[in-house]
Length: 160
Figure 1: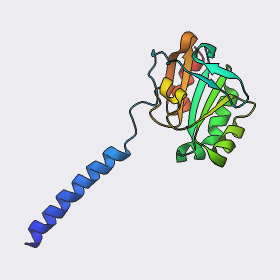
Figure 2 (figure 1 turned 60 degrees about the horizontal axis):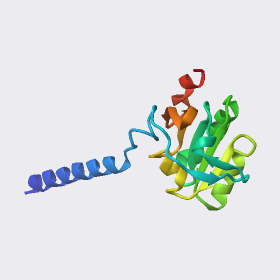
Figure 3 (figure 1 turned 90 degrees about the vertical axis):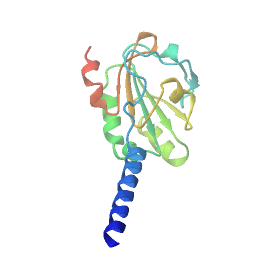
Figure 4 (figure 1 turned 45 degrees about the horizontal axis):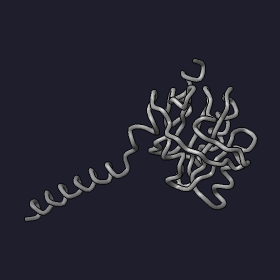
């Protein structure tokens, strides 16, 4: 009887492991894939500048970070350094609110045009954001040249 009970427990643990793995798995893409065109949006940056798809030129680096993302918070200095080193325009979207969002916004001050928006905001929808942090490099017309979860995903495309 103990043997049968043990097999039942082991089977149930395997089922739970599969459920947890599916729940915790990372999406297979960060945002819209290369070649996709960003959807229409119109927002106002923290500094009052109007930002829309038409205002994004070729070579624009776009980054999305969230206050609810532990990786974003942990890697913020690296993300800021990457934005500083980018030769073209930089747009950073901070998703969240409160003091944490204000701190993230200040980190990119003077380096990027910063847009603060709530979860599910217009920019996240236009770029089809699936996870954080997310990076994209754009061509003219809002076409995505490259995208990924880390700045290294864009490294080969920045010199093209």
